[in-house]
Image (cartoon, rainbow, N blue to C red; front, side, top):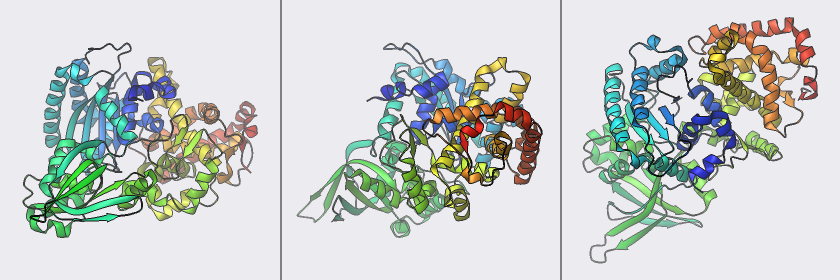
Length: 582
């Protein structure tokens, strides 16, 4: 199957996002996003004031941001050219993103621009990609490459001027058929780089053989590692939970240490560095009987541990005679490959959910979800390849955010996404023993309903009423979704007309159809959103930061709804037939 076949089968994505569907699909593939719908609400920009950027995606956990412009030709013919004016539009996008005065940026993207700039200043973003995404062949129009090259040069200069103290790399990439196909193939295969190559080793090593794997352990020159990274870029990390994060002074100070070591003490690098682990399709060892030296040849490679070592070493101009410990592993058992990758990356915070995936709560929840064949909950456990897109995939981080926000911790849910899984205290509060699969579905479907409600308002465009415009403006604020989930939880008694003694017991009686449950939420959102948007917007004016302000505003919203609960109960007389809270 090609990426086009897979993309065209994604009817929900296509029907929901239209011309933006390919943008989101590419983003999903490149960064292995489990629930692209939850990302779309924050990442997509409005068509009216987007200023030549259709999407702004910011991921502080990985240190990556993507600003994208998309183009989809409806009836594609061989030889069609991707219009270069769309590529040049990214220059306008870059001017806004790296504006000296964020207040001059149109309101619709102002919060995203401000967030990105602040993240760069705080060394939380080290790589910014500008994508031109289209469904045509990349080689057909060389002028696009020229536009993007010029744009990349200008943007790197702008970044150095705006952020002179920060190390940020800017890349402009054409994401057409060839690139998307490569990302699609990588999503179902651990090893993307499949070429056969000779390895520059110390000519000695040793082999270990297990039941279902074998490995060759040796040391390689830093020059060889640098050469492979410069040749294959991030493709060499296709099986790795994270790519190179740069050398920012805060989150990536370890990489600064690697750079300092190889610059100042290259001869000691082998002794100081933990080394690299790589999966390969196969390897062969040729012995020279005269010299006793061993020549190593490998077929295919993905560095599954050591991305920071690889990137840091490759960022240095001269690496001297530095050597790096390395082991090359061959394994054909997919379950063992998953365990090799997970266990080799336990020190990386990006896989916080992996470290919880085998605790008793997650094991129980996975078992509870087995009866819902239309849903997939991994419980933080990553498998080999993607789950079927015919199932609703519940992203473990969005699960944690939704539960946390629903139970009052909306500020933590929004600002500390990774801590929800990595911090023992926070994790225990989100995943207590009384949590059941049905409550996860309940809160997750609410989060999805908010995304769809916001999209419905966006589609209306200039037809939005004044009240709808206020709602849309509120939902466009960073953190508004988590705050509104909290507000909805406080309003449940007004909708149900009864005391809810245990909020953890709230669930839909019938969980066989996720979309139907989303529609129930949308009906309730339609009632409360006009009230909520008025009283909650001030809380997220500069981002969701104060739990105290959130509590106060949410109590006000719940109080107003309680005052008109007679009307609410009449309109939602049947709500108790679909929601269980005992």
